[in-house]
Length: 395
Ligand SMILES: *Cc1c(COP(=O)(O)O)cnc(C)c1O
Image (cartoon, rainbow, N blue to C red; front, side):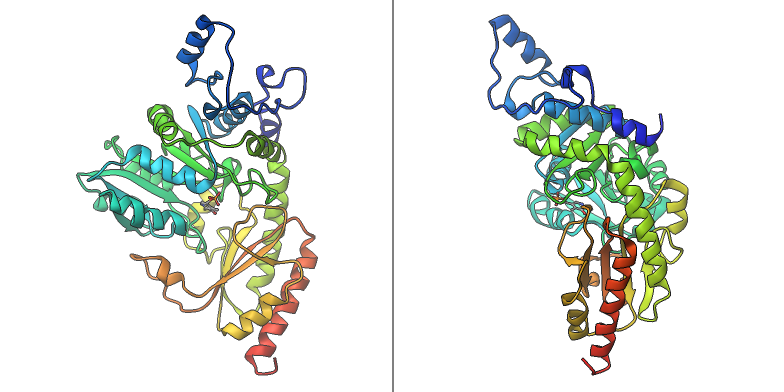
């Protein structure tokens, strides 16, 4: 089945939908049973998609987890109230005091904060590694290494990791659990479990829901890791609102067409930026200037609407002049909705420890939404004019 077809079919089991196209929205805390025997039976099956107590989910939850399992080729899938909760619960499910964690240096900042904060306090040590290390990851493994945490492309700077090389280098050390933050790619453009990763994590807040109105996280696990992830996530009290789950499953139906448009517009705008005098280089994985571009071409089936570029020179005032006046690009965190976003940062080097970010120059991250790209280019063009006028003292 082709990807777009699959998006329209996943999770639509009759037991979830009844006669309707979509699963019913079943809100519940308490599930009531008709008999002691039924209650006992449900208790036996409560870890396998049978209603038992609201925190374990309802049929709405199970329709979504089944859909994600089908998309990720996973044995099981757990839903969390946001992507960050999916990341922290996955790490906590496999790390104990005295364990060692390997984490990619270009990781999403709150993930790094969790490793340096709560995990450090609990006696878990972390070594950060170069996103381009490939098989050299072997040299960083310690006797107590328990988890390797990947994210590709990396947050903000977009380095693409050689996931197959890293996973292969760890072959024979099956006690090391590999996890990836797969939010950028979505299951459409990269399926980590097919490449030997144990757990694939998404901030469903982004493209999966896709309309900037939901916070949700999801972790999809292989046979080896599923039961442990499920048990400990449940012990942590992790669960999510069925309204948000329903809304995200609705978003999944249009993920293919949305991503295709995000990708097409982003490629056009990136190509336009590549020719701009103000731009030092692009950090778009589909362009050769992005570290790991060759790996991206090999492993990913497409790019999305998210990319960055580095300015040749700038000033705070010039940046403000540019960004404050944008008409279509809004300033804000998150991404993956239908709207375009712009974010500037000058402190990339503060967010990493083992790899060098050699430039002090400003990095701008764009999320290209579903607006007409010509309007977006005109918005950027006017922005650069304000930027240049300000830099040249005419602002
Ligand atoms: C947004 C984001 C997260 C966190 O997701 P929330 O739903 O906001 O908690 C994690 N990883 C990446 C790559 C993200 O972009």
